[in-house]
Image (cartoon, rainbow, N blue to C red; front, side):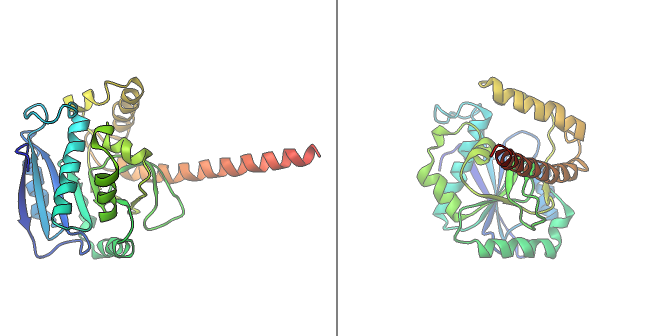
Amino acid sequence: MSSAYLFKEYNYDDPIFRNVDATYIIHLESNGRLASIKNQLFLYHPTSKVFIVFNKGFKNFKKEDHVNTPAKDLIDVFYTIFKDARSKEFQNILILEDDFIFSKNINDMEHSNKIDYFLENNAANNFVYYLGTLCYLQSGFGETHPRVIFSTGTHACIYSKKCIDYFLDNVDQKSLNDWDICLNFGTVPRYKYYLPLCYQTFPDTDNSRGWHRGSILLFFIVWLQRGLLCKILGLDVSCEPGFSNMEFVSRLLFWIILLAILYSIYKIIFNKQNFK
């Protein structure tokens, strides 16, 4: 394995999730978040096997030429993890980014059992399952595992074996510029738990200010999200109530869009009948 990465393994006998084989925690070396990771692992044991993946980063280690931005560096980590999971014959894996913050609710077996049940029933399917994300639009039918339509944040995602195989066998890493955008506009079905079990904050950093500078449109979207929305919701410094507020908004927006579509269909049919 490339010396750009170091995998450090931890083992626990009281995992939160029975149907997730391993957790991989992506850690960019020397970014100051290692202590937070260790504190989270002291409080919570997501799976029986946990790997902290130490990433030197493209600025400090020469990777392939196409790995030349923070976003592409993150994609390289995901593909490295997928290859490791395949070599170990893991089924479902949880990938955490090093700014993850577990909710205390994750230790509640009522929640973990529901997620384990979903994973067991969808073992043969291609999917990504979010333990938490800043959701802008989701299905709003009151499901325990709603479909994610549009979101920001891949800091706590469970990937099925079919999903891992799909990316490794069908998607050239070099064709991807951003993991979040890949999942939002790709074909892999995405689900989430009905309440956030894992958070992240969105502080203003050198890396975040540099995301998507090669695309005016994407840079504007990121600026709008990080510079405006996250500050209004206080997500640059705190997880709540911002995440819960966005949960409500994303469900409400679903119904607004659905009713608007139904009303438009009604108007089209009504107008056609009037012209007969």
